[in-house]
Image (cartoon, rainbow, N blue to C red):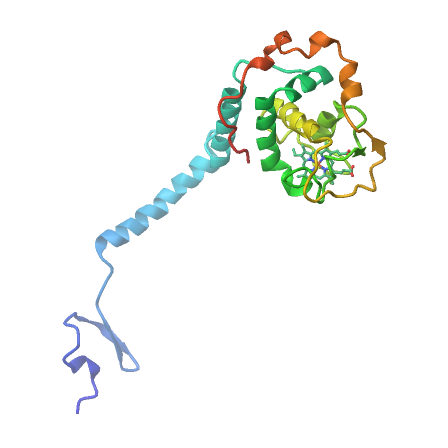
Length: 230
Ligand code: HEC
């Protein structure tokens, strides 16, 4: 009986290479030419790819494209609203506008609920629904805390993170509406010492015409349902 497996009937008809190691032989079965060329070309391509994205003009990476898209979205969202002052009157105006408050809520859902809970009851972050506050004395301080953060960035600063500074106003408007609501799992904030049961006192100090929708473009509506932010 032959011990040469190649002589068995199942053996391939491919030619053999002319070497053998310890009696082990090898078929001469090279990769197809198109495959090798594809391999070589992909290596050459990778050099151009690397240069294009890492040393080329800015604005080419996926991150750049994403921020450009986000800026365009914010532009579309805010339409003709123009620049807005981050002051009490502006905040109160938008707080009284349900469409902008729900836009603020979508910003909250994406960026804040991981720490403050889905309904503001507090997790790592403080309870935003109860009357106990730590960094906030007046309603406009909400924007300051969001912009600048608090407690060594335990509360992150959002000023540079939002693609549009108006996002701070809208998310603050939503946060302001949470005061006095009943979250499912309220956290008790024993660090918080400032007592604010409602914003009425702050609002009462504003001249009446400062918060009427006519006095600026607060009547402009967000463009459709607010899209998710990063
Ligand atoms: C990484 C967790 C985290 C995230 C995300 C976060 N916060 Fe906070 N936030 C905190 C912590 C912690 C505090 C308390 C800081 C302190 O002790 O002074 C806080 C405090 C606050 C306060 C002040 C509360 C008070 O009583 O003084 C407001 C308002 C607030 N956050 C709003 C927001 C909003 C709006 C967002 C989303 C844009 C957000 N936070 C995202 C952790 C977070």
